[in-house]
Image 1 (cartoon, rainbow, N blue to C red):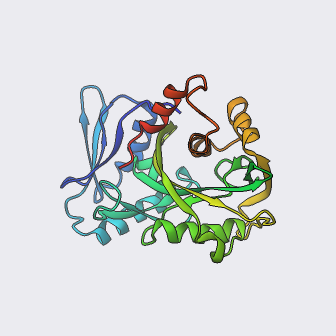
Image 2 (cartoon, one colour):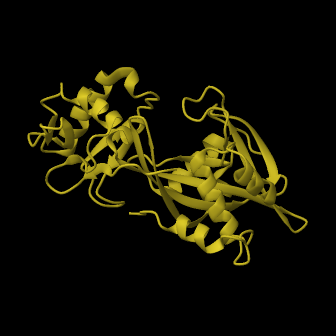
Length: 285
């Protein structure tokens, strides 16, 4: 994943979406569609070079509810430009746990450079002294990363729910894990990443969990988003990450974190410190 620009939510009083690097074609094409919504956005830039430097919300939108409604109407108007609408709201804040400026449709967050949060869980089993990971294969009809390999449980963190309650909810929906087991999921930290693709600028923070499962447990998807599950040795999962692009990209990071914490990547491994520094250098705010 490569960061090519610095563009995102600016808090404080301006309630603005800021693009510090100008002249990016995809960025300007998307902002061009926002110019019709004069009652919602104020757009400034360098007229001589026809570039955009700042997209702000109108000061007349004084409350979080006003902003949520106004931007929600914009997203509806943009139609197919923002695929995968889930009718699921993400809170927009300056950093995690801070006051909410407004809420935004989950699928639209990367189109506005909004930092989003999610939960990812490594579900593993121990047999005869060896660890195995349960790996899911995403449904072929999912709008994002269809058919790719995924964690046993993962999901975005919507407005108004704690991380622990969200992981319990996702455990039931995605893998049929009952609350009596999922409450044992252990928080093990967080990772972050940035990625740009077309109009989309993803800035995600993923709260990571581990859950040791009973040997005889077999996951069962309840929401239709997973095609199948497979239990594979942890070293096999590591080789898939190292040699292929089968995994959904952000899952790679969370599994690599698991490999460090469980001793599969150790100080004698080639490139240990460089990989560890890269994994820990993100903005978890």
